[in-house]
Image (cartoon, rainbow, N blue to C red; front, top):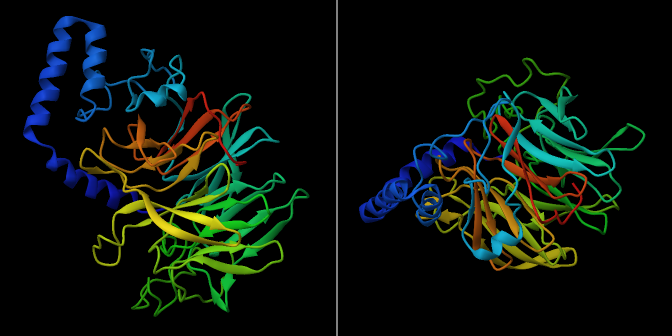
Length: 409
């Protein structure tokens, strides 16, 4: 994960860049529509979606178990391009299935088990939502600060563990296999997100975000996250740990079924890589990372990069989207593609822009899903794989769609 609060603060700062004329037009449009009637209100709201209200919808909607009905189509599912209407179910609404967590990450759907796995990274717990009764229970505790989760083409769960700084696979017989924990003799930084390829390989990002007390463990004395040695990573540790100091650059790796690990995207190409996924045809790799054109200290605003997949390597790097809407930067964290090639990207931005941004295969924004919380990651699931699961800070949200996820997990 990337710090949600850092992204939100940046977005709040940029909200001030909205022109006074735009604000007046949006306000006048909604006011006029209020006089003309409910249908005009809906039209005015769609016409003025560039201006976020102080709440997500007006009047604010209830999100609890006793939530009041929502008008269809859901006013927080916003069409930017008419093509988006082909992928949404206008007789469905965003629902909050569970809340009360710390920071949710890594949703992944098991087709065989008909359940969703997701991580509360700081709480050191993986949870499972059972589809038949929507019941949420602790699945693995401790999870060793698991972040990203996925299922490979054999239905095995694969997770990143930030505490041990490794990628692991859970076998069908219940045993666990360490996929990767080092590269060329040095321990990995903090594997974050991962995605399977049909050839059996696993591609994953390795930023530094798990080298903290809350989301994993800091370096031992002298390391980049503990330069003065004041933090003791061994206090409260669930098991004996070996000394570790971060030494590797923040790369993107490809793990092969032979056991080999190779760098496919270097730190020079993308700093602090985060979310990762493939296009439906596996010809394009998408990676979230810092915009190297704009630097603030050792990081920059998050953007989505695209690469051409060339066998075991990639090339043709380009920015797919800078994740800016109406002058507001919507910091991305995780993403998934659907079967039509659309990219569904989480947005960590100010209220009114937090949620999910949807781009077509050409990188054009076609739709938005507004949530009352910063969104960290998304996944497709459900029996028909047409339900979008959204891990948003403290809560898990769902939205049935008229499209399907392009990959297992």
